[in-house]
Amino acid sequence: SMTPQKGAAGTYVRITGRNLEDNWQVIFTDLSPIDIHNWQSDLLEFNIPSGLPKGENEFAIKSGNTVINSPIKFFNEGVTINSFSPAQGNAGTLVTILGTGFISPSVYFNDVVGNIISYNYGQIVVSVPQMESGDVKIAVRSYDEIFITSQNFKILPWFYYAVKKKADQNDLPFIINKMLICLIIKTYCGLLW
Figure 1 (tube, rainbow, N blue to C red):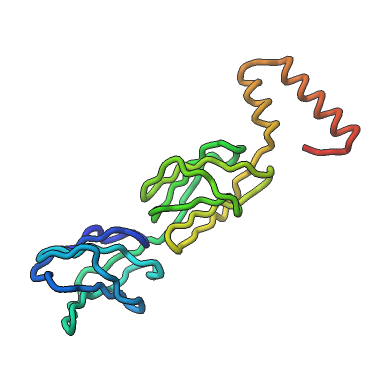
Figure 2 (cartoon, helix red, strand yellow):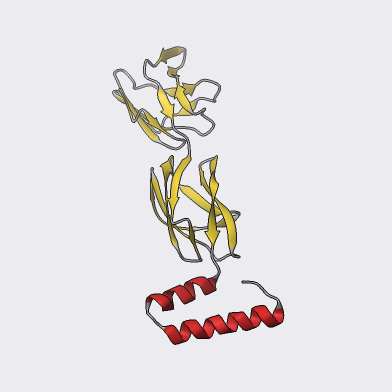
């Protein structure tokens, strides 16, 4: 038997059987043989390599001239992002990314690395890095696979959150003061925020 039977590059897989004491290798079609991390008479353990096509993949185990084709196929889900929330925020905002294949991931907002707070195979919580306001793409890299979102994440200006926080606290004098400052800057300097 093999567990798990699906995952992504880096997934740790265990094959159980009999007479597995020799120096075995795992062979996926079109990839170099994979060395086994741990083998015993009834167990082989290895990591799924990068470069494996998405979908079902046949494999064999080999020791010397002995090749055993596995009746079980491994389904490579690859790295995917199904959703993220919230859709906007500024530096320090925590974004939850849902998907598959998150094994030792890195998260990028355009080309700026975010600080990962926590992750597991299907979820990442990342802090938005300090960067200019505007629309950015979120990308997750896991092993050699990269998935880039088709939707944009909007980096909001720091001012937006400063005013929103004070508005939530019903601090009307602060809000009016900041709005007047921005109106003066926009009017006299021609700057847009």
